[in-house]
Length: 218
Ligand SMILES: [Zn+2]
Image (cartoon, rainbow, N blue to C red):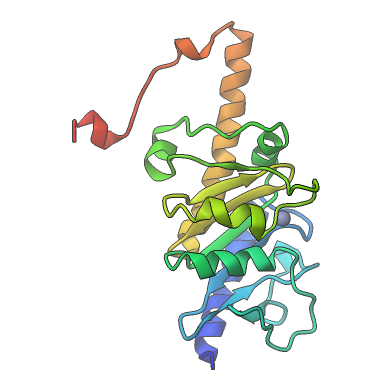
C-alpha cells in the first residue's frame, strides 16, 4: 500500500537525521528514537529497538502502519513506538519526531527543572518546552503522559524527566533542528545559571525581552 520510492526516500532522510544526532553527541548507544511520516499512506518509518543512531540503514528501519501493524521485520519494535504513533494520530501537523537522550537537556529534566527559553531564538521558535514527569508508577513516560501535552498544537518540543527530549515538526529537518536547539538551550541555561550563582546575580538582574514582533510593537 505504501509507495516503495516514498519508503526509500523517508528511510534515507531518517538515516541522515540519525547520523547528525550521533555526530553532534545528542544520542550515543542504541537509545532514543526517531521517525517520519510516509506520504503515500497512513504509516511511518521508525528506528527499531537495539539499533544505534549511527547504525540505522535501509535494512533495519521499520515501516509501521498508524494502527500499530509492523511490516515484516527481523527487528524488535522500539519501546517508544506507541508514543510516536499516538502523536502522529493526534497531530496532523506532525510529520517527524526526533527523540534523544541528549545529556544537557536530560540533566535538567532529571533535576526536575524545565529548560527555560532564554534566547531570542527559543522565544520566537519554541515558546515553551514543557517538562513531562515520569509515569504514575515511576516508570518511563508513555503516550499516557506525553500525548496530553502535545494535544496543545503550539507545543513543538518537550523534555521527559529522567529520560530525554522530544522535537516534532512538519518536516524531519524541522524536528531535527528542534532536538538540537533543546540541547543547545539546556547547555546555555546551565552556563548562565552557573555564572549567575558565581557572581551573586538573581533573576531580577536579567533583562526582560520578547520576540522581534513585540519589539516592533506588532
Ligand atoms: Zn527514550
